[in-house]
Length: 346
Image (cartoon, rainbow, N blue to C red; front, side, top):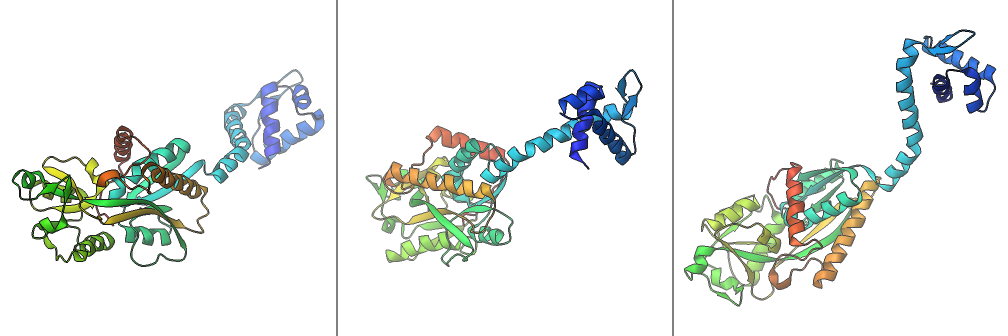
């Protein structure tokens, strides 16, 4: 289809006069008339009723005019659209994330990204870290927030650490009231709960997180007593609130308010969990590059805030850029997107 002829058609339809249309197009009338005839022949329809006195659109021409006008507008918009796509201002982005990111990095990252690039459609998918890596390799997602695995990532992937977060103890409030656990200056010695049941993710579901916790116990010469296993963070906290045991969880889980649960910092040097962004090195999508830029800035901002990337003060939740109220609202907005919660952490 010759776009030049379509432009001629619209101009003649607007003027309903070949002479005036030719003047607007800076051409003479004969080639304009020939172009319209060629278009009618190409379409096998008559677009104009021609008499010696006037020119009028046929019913077919009237209906076709709106479609052609819209098509030409879209064609004219293509250069700007291409530039927006190249800058990552429009398009789509599929982002995986681990459960704990829902309480620290994810709300702010998506809030900032959405505010900067509101025309990009973001699809969120909650996945364990190993499944995210697999999905990246297969092109099913563009990037992911993961807890890095022990093994080295594939050479085709890039990784940016964003958050180093201390673990805290989540203990039943009843244990505290009954003196079953002793909290001194807001801290808990891990040796004081060595014989208490531990609620933990099974290693098959969260190997990195599981090993961080068991290694911490081993460094204190303790063999943890596994009381319950659960693959959902919300379930773990619910089991703690029911007095089924205690758990070690990221400090940001303080935001998961639950009656009957006390979050307590660990005495000494607590174990630290790292969360970062992973993506394919050769991903051609500009939306991914923009996400990486925002994520890096987020990590740097968190570092400026707390003296270490995402390191919470006093063993509490990590200090990120958004105020608490904004974090809650951002997380509410995320939940409204229906991304679901499989609940596994790694």
